[in-house]
Amino acid sequence: MKDINKVIGSIKDMDSDEALEKVAKMVKNGEAGMTASQAISMANKLMPMLDKSQQEKLRKLIKKLKS
Image (cartoon, rainbow, N blue to C red; front, side, top):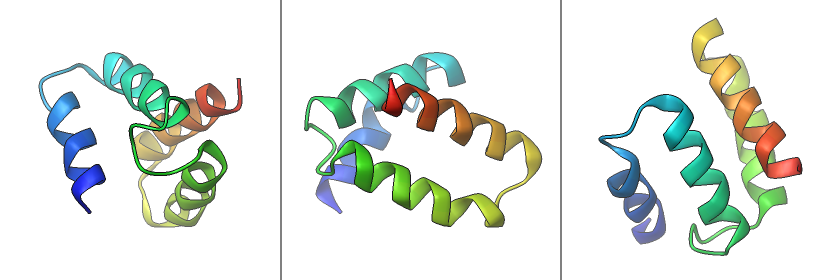
């Protein structure tokens, strides 16, 4: 939970594109406390619970994590 709070705290004042880029970078660098595959798995589990706008942002994050 500490790692998630660190991620949220570091992106709270950013626009969504900046935040997605930062989160992807943190995951890839190991700063988020999970691997890219773990983050993708979690994102896919959350997807059905989100509205269309949130789903699109999550898809962008997944794409960044896969690249």
